[in-house]
Image (tube, rainbow, N blue to C red; front, side, top):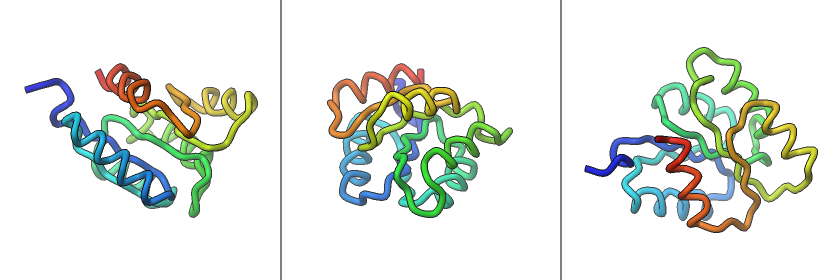
Length: 125
């Protein structure tokens, strides 16, 4: 059994096609995946499913990504979960903000799948 098996990854992403593609890529690597298409549902999924990692988009309906990140890091139930931000939004200010709020990694769209998988593996192990 590889170390990815039984590790749970939550993808909070409103672009359905990207969310499903990412979930498929991760399942192929042995991860169990969950998808939320808005911030509110994503926050509750992170808590209810006791995930090992959250992949978070910034531009989300029902609670933008920064708000979701802040909530995840403030909650005693989810503050320990590593968060990888994956967003189309650009800028050093955004990147600095994301890290100040507690994210462990930042990727811009489009992304390199191998780099993303490497970062996920490092954050989960």
